[in-house]
Amino acid sequence: MSDVGIDAVEIWTGKLKLDLAETFAPEKGDDPAKYTKGLGLFESSFPDTYEDIVTMGANACKRLMERHDLSPDDVGRIDVATESSFDNSKPISTYIAGCLEQTFDGDFHHANKGERKFACVAGTQAIDDAYNWIRAGRNRGRSAIVVATDTALYARDDPGEATQGAGAVAMLVSEDPDLVTLSDAQGYGSADETDFLKPNQQFPSVDGKRSVQVYLARMREAVEDYESVAGDLHPDDFVYAPFHTPFPGMVRKAALLAYRHITRDTEIEEELADAIGMQPRREEFDDDEAFSEAVSAYTDDLKGTDRYAAWYDATIDPTLDISRRVGNWYTGSVHIARIAGLKRALSEGRDMTGERIFVASYGSGAQAEVHHETVQPGWDEEIAGLNIDEQVADRYDLTFEEYERVHAAHDHSKDRDFEEFTAPEDEFVFDGWGRMGERKYRYVE
Ligand code: CAA
Image (cartoon, rainbow, N blue to C red; front, top):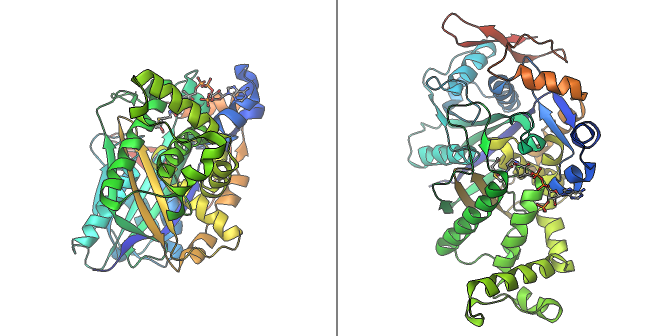
């Protein structure tokens, strides 16, 4: 059985930017450091008024197919992961295929299309579906396209407004991939939670503080589940650990707990013992409260060690390079974290072939999934072909008043007749509604 994994990737950011420290914080009466230091976010991406989850996804797919000289016949499956869908019946993948058919010869009539929903973990689930389809031998030599596309908007004045973002990641899943192969071993942590949900409403109902705790709890369960099949993790096992990144500060919390967990009973715990003692063990304490206080104190001390800081700087920080500048992309977020890590490796001239990365996805509601990936020989060429830095640099910088208009323009309950901020060129754009309430798209040269 040949290896299966991600063969190619492409990213498309919304074309507008909100500077959180300079533009957003002053209007909210906040210290800019809450964003840059606390949340770890500098800017958020927003879609221009002619962009949405379909245009961003289709534009990412078009670049992906062109870069790899693919035709519709090479694709047997298109799955879209999103939590920003505008249709409860017709999947976004049909709209995206319709866009692509405007510009490519041939069609996707023999490709299976669908839409995956489980908050932000759905992108990873769609990759899983593609992997299983290929491993089952049902792909007839064809690849799958997985698109993670979201407009992550919160209601105005919700605390989540600080962590918005918009963009799409398109990924080609194939046999003998050029970028990464996926492990069979996986771990899941899944429970019925009400931390973040959208019960038939556009903007989420969020219990922000609780959502942070649920993320950590489900992630811990997923890691333990993975270890039950793959053996205990050790920090030397992987060079990067891309996490779902609603904001980098969330990953900072998760990474610290993960490091504590994977260094327990290792030589690293012993080597740190002189400085901060050994990790507290439950049997040493009379009650849960005393144990949990000791664990918190140990974790604080661990955070201050050079050893932890060096691991964090090498393994986690590179994965946040894109997220800091674009905000939360929900389903796409963990996938831009993977790409950010590999981009950093490329810029440092590192040879990554054969190295492992540990990928930690999360979706509210709630489910975490973890697995590892092995970097393949074509990774450097694939990553070098991305133009995300140029896209990020070229975004239109919104004033606060313009941001308010953009938020309203994407609010489904409001009249959408708003002026655009940028001029579309060589891309798909939203083109109004059809007679059955469907959204229409056209390609602009
Ligand atoms: N200097 C430095 N740091 C500062 C600061 C300053 N002047 N002011 C505040 N901070 C720090 C705070 O201490 C805090 O850090 P810690 O948590 O490490 O203490 C951080 O900045 C944020 O400050 P607050 O907690 O006061 O911020 P808030 O109450 O306005 O809301 C939030 C933060 C709850 C995350 C909110 O943005 C939110 O609800 N976001 C949406 C939900 C979310 O992203 N949850 C993440 C887990 S769920 C998930 O991952 C799925 C998903 O994609 C949504």
